[in-house]
Image 1: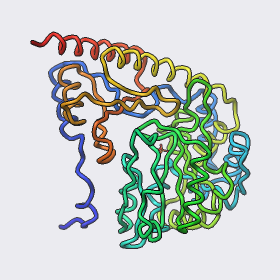
Image 2 (image 1 turned 90 degrees about the vertical axis):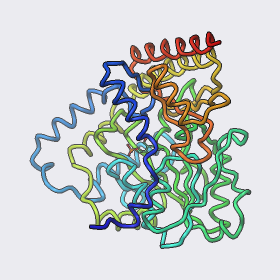
Image 3 (image 1 turned 30 degrees about the vertical axis):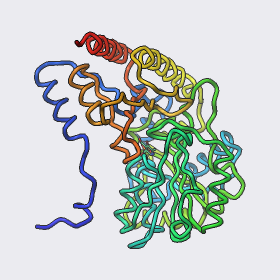
Length: 392
Ligand SMILES: Cc1ncc(COP(=O)(O)O)c(C=O)c1O
């Protein structure tokens, strides 16, 4: 049996060694605290679960769903966008429910990329953008996201022949892993760039509801012309602590939405309907949970920042997202530093290089560790720091 070249081309799984060390420590009965995963620890709000439970008892929801979702779910998404961002969407043409946004993000390359075509992909980034491109037979041109430029891609830096040839441009704000945010001015420049080079834009915005200190991240769809050039991926995962239910959406340009729907209708049969009813409840029901969750994340951010500052690790306090992007000390690479923290402090962090070459020099910490474990983790980091200082 021989697997495809596609499978062989997948990047090596960087965390093998770290996972092996975690297993080894656990087997010895040693405690390991993880600050690595961006998966909300707080449960889905009760009213949403209640709606799911009711809908699960209705036999009408036991049958195949439609790939493009319930019309009332598409309408709920449009209503939510109008209320949250002041963006009008045509529910039957400009909205497509997804089985978690990851599903659509992975599949959209099939709508634009033929073998040899180019996608412009940020580095570091969520790994599904480059992998989706590769599965479609395309090539990535990586746009460095560097601290000096606020972790925004420098569109002027992309050589014109590359930009003219590219079919797709990925952006993601609030950003994973750097936690950077973008303003409407940047999104306007992206629309201008898309028009100039005839490129489709995919903005990935699952963290727009996770924000701090009163900051409210904008939607790409808010800028004039966005709907002519692109789509936005969104998700209920982080906004409503629904990562386990797998429900998200793509909104925007009707031609792109239709193309994605054609791909999906050949591959999947949509989101289970009971989950769509729960998602409608999330989008249109009480929204207090968002501020409540953000208050928890903000408190954790502040606790982490206090410790990082005290032990001399440099990071900018994030205004949004579930992450802190931390510069590592001189003399380490990100995998080596993550291994040191695991071995010596019993704390798991994500090495930046896992998100691309330009992620080297950083680690990513997440705000989704329960408070008591976070406090333990912070104590372990402080103890590690003191022991390091007392070395001869
Ligand atoms: C930037 C980004 N996009 C998309 C996703 C996928 O989210 P979901 O598939 O749960 O909607 C994630 C998940 O961590 C993410 O970080």
